[in-house]
Amino acid sequence: MCHALLQDSRFFCLLLQIDIELAAQTRAGGCLCGGVLHCANFPRKPRCCLNEVRADYEWRFSFCCNRCRKRTTAVSVRFLGRRVYLGLAVVLMSAGRVEATSAVAKLGEIMEVPVRTIQRWRNWWIEQFPLTPLWQATCARFMPPVALSQLPASLIERFTGTAAEPLMRLLIFLSHLTVGRPLTLNEGC
Ligand SMILES: [Zn+2]
Image (cartoon, rainbow, N blue to C red; front, top):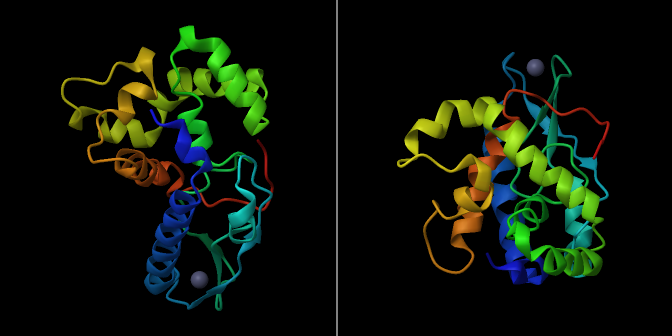
């Protein structure tokens, strides 16, 4: 898996464009009550974000209904739920081979991600991700079955394309992790 994407501003811009499109779709869909959605983005302080795109990454696209005031947050390929680290970091830094621990530690140092955080992500992939409604609803589509003990690397390799496309497709797939669970303004890690 190509860790260079963590420092590729073009890839960050691509993900931003995808989020802009996803947000436009969400807005066009309107509120469940029939009301009109108005922009009500909320601020983020993303970690593992490149400085040159940071200004664009400090907002998550979200909307507020003009009638019932309910918030609707667009799905995102940049943010994986409420984590403060960007989704691509949670995927790429978890996907290193376990035996290459020193390489991951070095990368963590560069990206300012503690090794224990990377270990927590790996545990989430193996223990929690298979239990998510997204995975429960979609795992049967992957044939042969994805090796859960090798997540997320075993999942990335199921997405095809050249260069950054497999990761882009995986992030689009993962964006549905938070569908139906509107995010609150509280940000955990
Ligand atoms: Zn409404």
